[in-house]
Image: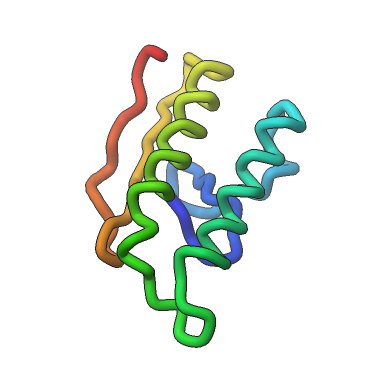
Length: 98
């Protein structure tokens, strides 16, 4: 799930995990960083960090795709994706076989 100024990856206690704490290919780390920058800079108004509703589809498409890539790398772990629409968080979606 996206969150302002964090990796968008959380452990089972919903504590953000830094990219450097998990083994991911550099290309995937760069994609995740790009997604976070997109969320931080393009999906919110500059001053008050209000979510731009028109950005939800792109945000969720990219985020879900990243979750699937992580699941493909680590099929043994539980991967959940939680998108955002209209400024509200969606229910968790478990990413299964890719």
